[in-house]
Every structure is written in structure tokens, then in C-alpha cells.
Image (cartoon, rainbow, N blue to C red; front, side):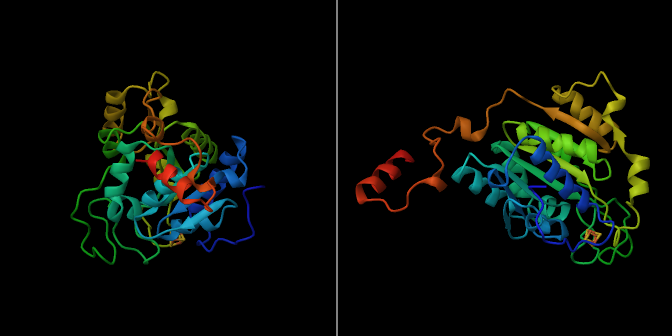
Length: 284
Ligand code: SF4
């Protein structure tokens, strides 16, 4: 209850993003967070509205730039649990440069991508996640570009936590978000979140038919990066569950020399010249 506010989402009825919102709220409550300990930073797109629908610190940023803002928030106050979120267009097109470098930087942030394989807010154009041959207003003869695989890119970029889920599977999604928030480093959670208004191909039924749940492979070891890459390729990127986790690599903030434990955001701004010089010296 604590993470609910009184803002009514203006997503279309049936949009997958409702379940992502509910899963974030449940996961935050399940791990014992309070609203003032969570920040949700989003980009632009239908899914970008999510930061206004959760009772926590929130910032609805600019297109493709949720991650730079989220990283700034985390650096200013490492005591906060920080979630960055947005859609596949936001994170894997205009924001892809930030996504790759945030992955390899490994700051302790959870990045939740609502992957509906189309641009919804601008009324239905092909996104980097759309399949070849996908027909939209921007590709009336069908897309001739190959589909981007965020899971393969994340592993190649040195990700320490990669997971994928489906917005209809609230139980799995909530537990993956909890695991991502508790992971010490950057966690990417790609969520199949159907756009019921503009994507008439990748529907709830289509995802149910094509998803391969990792629970089917009890011998699967998510600490094995090569096995993870193989499984992603074998399943055409349709697998769900915890795909890869490296629990040993330290996060950026734990490795950064001279990076103070005390939150910058909590420091007294009414500093004397002497105090100011001392603070600057600490961060040189
Ligand atoms: Fe969701 Fe699509 Fe509606 Fe946007 S246009 S709110 S993605 S169903």
C-alpha cells in the first residue's frame, strides 16, 4: 500500500505496464523499503509515465536519458535504491549508448525495460525490438532491419545481472525485481509488456506461446556466462527468468576511490569557505 499514490495511470486498459508498476510496488514492499528509500527515474514513452505512479522519489526525464539521471541520483545518495525504467524505444534506440555504458559501469541500479516491440506513445512505429517484416506506419512494407537482442548485448557489455520476464507473470516479475534491487551492481530486467493498442502481432497470447521459462531447465546455472549466451541464442531471446548473475564483481561505487559513504544529497549546503574547500578536496 505504501508505494501506491492517488495518481490514476492513463495507460490504455490492458497495457502490460500496469503489471510492471504493481510488481515494482510489491517488490519494494517485500524487501522492506519505505517510500523515501526508493527513487524511480524514467525516460519518455508510455512506460516513462511510471515514475509518477509510484509513491517514491520520482523523475520523468527526457528521451533515452533515464540512465544518466539515475546514475547521478545514485552517486549523490548511495543510500537510495534506484530504479531506472522506460520502453524498448527509449532504452534500446536513442538511449542505447547510455544503456551499454551503464551496464559496463555497474553502478548499483535496477533498469526495468518495458519491451512492447513498438513505439506506443507516438502511435505505432517500428522499434529496435520489432521483428523483421513487422508492418507499421513507419514500415508499411515490413521492417527490413534485424531485431536487436538486448540480452546478448548486455552479456557482451559485461553485465552482472540479466533477467527477462513477462508482465502477465506477476510472481516471477516481482521476484526478479526483488533480486535485481538486492543485487550489488547494475541489473537489467527486460519485461515483455504488450501494447494492446498498436501491436496486434506481439499480443499476450503470442508471448504465452513463444516464451521459454528457464524453470524448464533445472540444471541451468545462471553464474555461467557462456551457458547464458548459448541459451539466449537457442531460444531466440525468448527465455524468461534469471539468465545471468555475477555476485562477485564489485559495484562502481564500491570501487571508486575517494567516493564518500556520506550522501552528497544530505550534506549541509550552508558551508563556510573552509568547509567547501575541504569537501572539494575530498572528491579530487
Ligand atoms: Fe500501453 Fe500501447 Fe496504450 Fe501505450 S499505446 S499505454 S504502450 S497499450
